[in-house]
Length: 302
Image 1: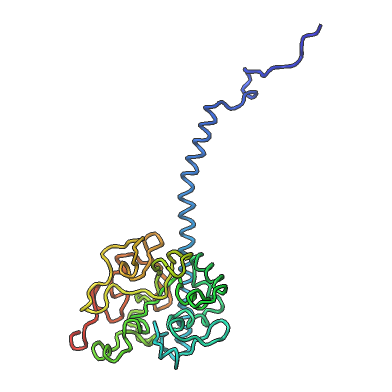
Image 2: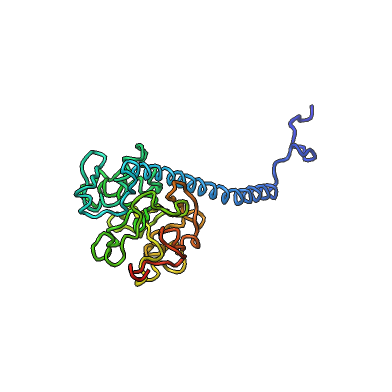
């Protein structure tokens, strides 16, 4: 009887062997180490892409801002208009061609959108805000409306106190003018340091109770400087808090969301990154500022 020809694995031949448990564990460990190395790099890459997109958006925003000025014979866009302005000489329309008044028109987005060549969605980088804009037409009340959400949460807020003037700061009132004059720029050619003067910056705002699904939007229609008047003193806290419950008090609504820096759109039209130290310098905010801690005094006192 011939011997059985069925062969058993040749243990002496390494090609016939499978992986041992130790070898499998070593392979898994190597893969885990590689993933650990790659994930931070991928995460940083995604964050850098977001920064580049926002810088590009800032540059496009300034194209619209300067185009508005060109059509307005050199006058800059009012930062935060008064109700009287948007009910009178400043005519603002929504996407349907209907005239807007009140706070929705007082904020800058609906006034600059006609100069954004139809690419106004570039103003909104936060996916939650984009989603809220897309779904806002499903809600009947003003607090959830399309016009309202667009007016509130652009990624970059305007330096409205010092560029164009702000009714929120009382700058158009007779008493303010009597005390301080006109501290804000009204014409493009008035800027003495256009390459160093902020027009818009990365913005943030506190959680929105009326729009709970937005949580903490990475965007707001205005940013505020660390100083305003001498009597008020410093308006910002001494250090940046990413999770501050009141980002207005902490950093004037400025967001340092890009590796500890904010995107800033400057008056000459270019965009650059600025950190906490730079943004604390009033010479980046007010064209008349003569020092880092400059503040507005009375006409007789400064």
